[in-house]
Image (tube, rainbow, N blue to C red; front, side):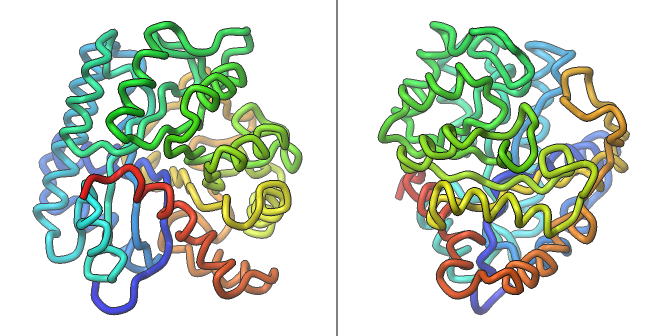
Length: 340
């Protein structure tokens, strides 16, 4: 990839679940290069954030082994495709992606379960290149309550310690999957730190526990955070899973937060689910009629991003405003997490 930068920054794509499954468990060579690199190239991706996510039924040692396997698959992918991609661990790495010389890929941690009860493990993951962290998935863990919990719990004392360590390291703090009490406490505790909600949408457009209220959207913007609009029927609208419905969420977020606080966080799952046979746990918050491999029409993976870009232009997004939403806003936050 050379020439003008692609421009799209995607804050959340679980592609490592498939890459690790194929490359480590099945021994398939060049798994990333065969199954994901062409999609990222067709989608004109500048930076893809790649979460580390563990099967929550194998806690905690099994969860750690799972995500370390994904780190190994990530490093293998970077080595095998080093002329095309760069692991973004420093600001210098990111500049390569911004110049269009490589596609950037960056690690995040989705859920603190692999850390067990050891806050110091965050430093280990930082040394492995993790530059973004979300404390929870949907359920309660030793650090915080997730979005599927309906009680008053937010951060635990251990969670507060973990947040402080991650802020000191410089990690982007991801509020996706947080319960409402966790969201508010995290926002207060991380004031001044780089903050995102990597993949969610607007509750005023479609009411779902994974989406944010207008009050949350306004507070996130006031704290300098960015919302990555999720492109999955679960959050967009299972009854009308269309690109126009995705843009309805973008429109609303822009109206409430401003065009400088909205980005993209796809959570594309169709290819991954079909490749690994993922069975959603009871607290996945999938609506009863929604199949695990559901996708937005004409927006099932990064290769379909041109469809979204074209429709955004038709809906009135142009110039710097469009560039900001496609990537500029998330880049501004992510740069703050990167050492030189």
